[in-house]
Amino acid sequence: MRDKRFARWTAVAPGGQSDEIRPALRIRGLAWRNSLAGDFMFSALHGILHRTVPDARVQGRGVLLIPGFLSGDYSLSPLAATLEALGYRIFFSGIWYNVDCPFHTLPRLENVLRKANDKTQAKVVLIGHSLGGIYARELACRFPNLVEPQSYWARA
Image (cartoon, rainbow, N blue to C red; front, side, top):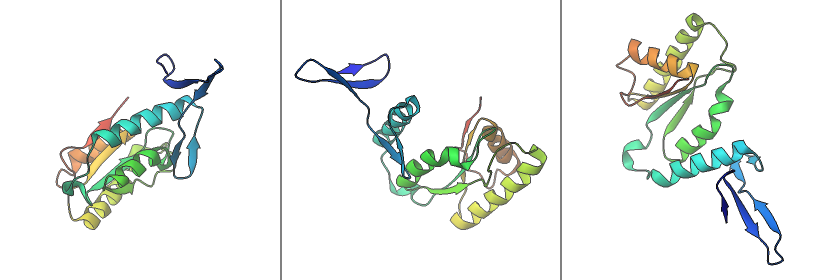
């Protein structure tokens, strides 16, 4: 039985007692169970995995992930694991906590973008979250020859 208010599964035992069941989501050794974040991540990744069919065109295509303000590459590791399972080659930005001045961050991101382009020998897809989306847009404007036109920028 599906309880739509909380996006949780509820099982009713033969004795009439209900027991809440949430599927465990394992991402690189972390179990996301009994949390709203786990429910959200499970439904988001489940939808991505079941709607996207890996094909030969994505094999080895480079993706540069840029985290948002006050977060680092660790926050994008669930997305990286999913994209890696689909056949993409993942490149992290090297940002521990995205709090540095943009004048210092953009040259470092440029170096990562150039290395990703050299390793894949193709244009790189940029995926940025929040402030990372602004950085991704700026990199795409400055280096259109290195960036895939279908880049994704999730800005707040």
